[in-house]
Image 1 (cartoon, rainbow, N blue to C red):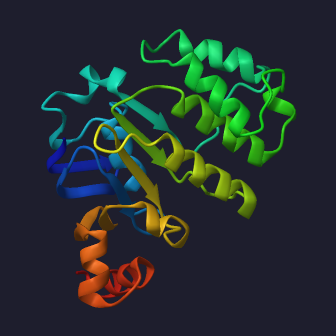
Image 2 (cartoon, rainbow, N blue to C red):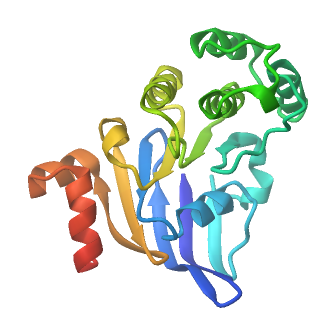
Length: 231
């Protein structure tokens, strides 16, 4: 389980998270939804142990996230790949850092995503780079998978491949996936639980199916209503 306990995070005068309080259950697919600048990326970076709160506490399985990095696979929104590397060299590089790297899984995903180890990262398309980022993240057998805006700026066909790869890889009940995005429509059917945030605060949270039935709305419509009303 991941816990946020009255977390506050500031970057200078900018308030990224404000009394952020949440429990993210294990073994589920959780959507962290909200507009750009809502604090979604900050929350994921805290789970990954890359940011520390100014106040409050973040716990992963009851521990400080800096002690659980080997359990967490994090896909950042920014392109972090070295352009001079081939896909194979990037995989070898990542694999040396994590004991949960699964070479068989990597080779299976490499084929499924129609990638080649000899592709030079600096010379492939944006869509292919997105698939390489996902490949290197999913090739770990991590307990927690954090995906920050995985569909941002990607063409429709590549988005479908990315979504299908996440579904294909998911170990239900064993793995927790947290997807941060403002593009809800394309992953609505994937998430079990949702957290809607705005200006660093949670405005609504709950089971995705229950919310749809209670309000007779899609998650996109629910988010719009929640952002207008603040609840």
